[in-house]
Image (cartoon, rainbow, N blue to C red):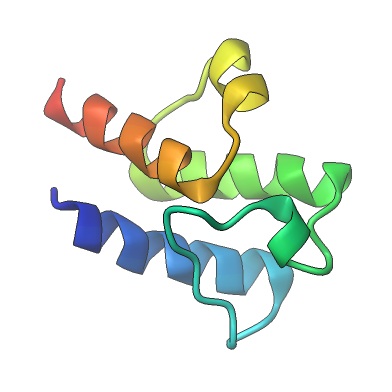
Length: 81
């Protein structure tokens, strides 16, 4: 799995969760960059990402992620294992 393929899949998940085909996430994307990204949508997003990639984030990872790049890095690390 490459970083590019992770971001392609993340873009689809974000577009689906936030119902916005214009969303394009990158390493530095944060909740401040997406209008509807609040605490409830964050939970929906985490669940959708976990389902898409077949992984489970632990609570420490969920609370420490500062941007989409950190999320992608965790996904890549999990894919290598």
